[in-house]
Length: 301
Image (tube, rainbow, N blue to C red; front, side, top):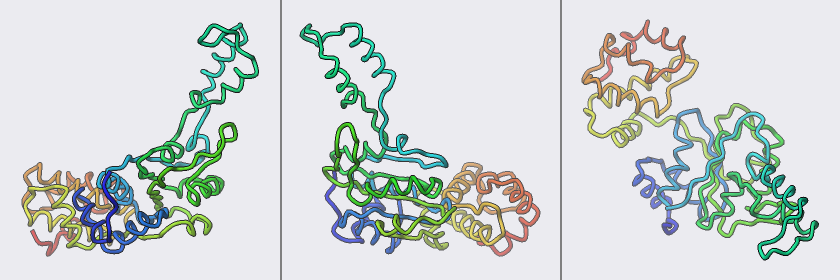
């Protein structure tokens, strides 16, 4: 496990080593989260690299990455822990049929029942797993805005004290607090109680220069003129009233696709069949295809 970086600049350099470029604001937030043991709340449009922050940080710091993908209706047991009921039932039946311990002595029924709620029957889920990691894992709670209010409230103990209470076993506290990264696409407003426990940062789309640098880093070997033209075109696409604006991942995928096809200069006829790499909605595709020549006017490359 790598030592903690001693400045935001050191954080940025570590992430760059994992092919993730971050600006000063994001590097500062990460530095504060690491040194103050505070969770991070990263909001922004889909596709701007929020999830990748946690992945790159885990790799750069030499920590385990534990991911909890949130969704509508997620329950605490699915995020925290569950008991292995089939195995408990088998154990209970064996005890009822006169089971004995390893030494061959008959077991006390009450003791056997108590054992049913011991560690070997506990199935840990992401939140418990992150707390029990000895290296201070990176815990990614992805798309928290998809979960409901009750699940948000459930998270407060973990985010405040880095511990959880299991009634049958007691309190489990992290030996070393994990770096918690919550992401949100802002499909709904999160509660103040959750926000108060976090360091907040908004991740927007990068400017043309930074996005070109990201593409060159993630898709090396492409002609510089092609990279610049793709990035400028995607920036124009984001200015349209699309159902789903393309994210940075779509920019990288489109640039790779064009490079694979040997495209060196953006041309409407050549680009039209590749739009599925950057646009993910039928109406958006039809709209852009109809105006592609106008969109490409004056684009370098």
